[in-house]
Image (cartoon, rainbow, N blue to C red; front, side, top):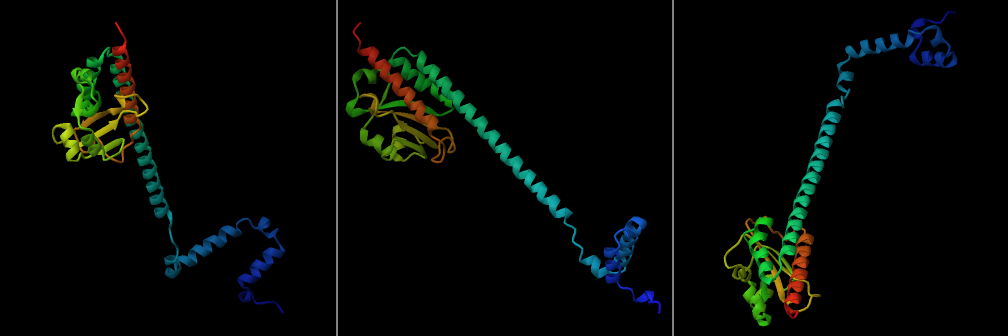
Length: 238
């Protein structure tokens, strides 16, 4: 008896193709006809269509977010590099100013008159403890403050960045939005190690505790070495 064609199932078709793979070579349009038939069935089956999830918008949105994140990170790196370049240029100009000073008065002039322009600050000064301040340093233009006042402004640290306390305001001479106060290197001889460099900021963001301090420490070292050299030349007999 001939088998009823209507009783052929999809399993029979798969089994036949598996046993006779060359049938696809003899019927190249078979796969296309099967896909067309599947599309026709799904067009009449809204439940199946509802189960189809198009991930293209999600993937596109994720790609846009990733591109935006990378762009912001790149912009941040460029901004940081530009700020570092400006800081190093300022330090370079300050170093040149220190090197051009020939005596203590010239050194004090560079710090008090040129540093505010170079670093865009309200005030800059070189301060020495009053308990160990030689008269020639005071005459040259160094500011004089009690050691306890300086320690209070530094909050017993070698470096202070941020909003000045009452002791800091007293040292500046007026209220300031922010302040950088750095001790000159203690490895240098007295009275250089008894001095501090003051920079009074124009804005609260000028000096903050979370800002990098490497350039300020390097600046204080340059000031300290220059001061020591000027004192040494002053001590030499003429």
